[in-house]
Image (cartoon, rainbow, N blue to C red; front, top):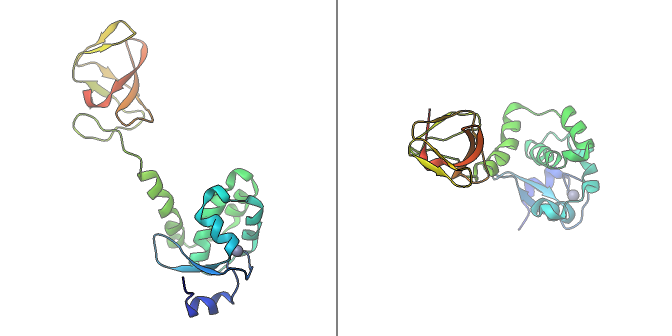
Length: 185
Ligand SMILES: [Zn+2]
């Protein structure tokens, strides 16, 4: 990728994250087209989360003060990805961002969460943990030896990793129910 002249001038020809001048390239900050200049090391780790070396990102201690929104977005996302290390959380707490820049930084994270299929009832209504649902069909509960009767209300359901299943308590027993046989109450 060729490097935009404006980007080269703005950055002073060094990585906008760690100030290295090796293997420079432009990195587009999704979901916008705005680019920042990054070195080979930063680029590799930004593009492949399995290569992330937390120690390299100590450089964010300085670059978090960049006035460039696109740089702030990358810093914010990387600090968030690393916050289990402890020190990145301290930097996040002191980092200053305008509201619109923060919204941009968080936009990518939300997209990832939205990839997960929501759990829907028989009408297609999205179910959430804590909802109450009504069973719309007599359901034999295998292994528990009873039938969950049509019309039974199941309160305080829990979602599972499978969007077609929820968990709830029926007749005092915690069971898995198929969401297609439920209606949100
Ligand atoms: Zn770098």
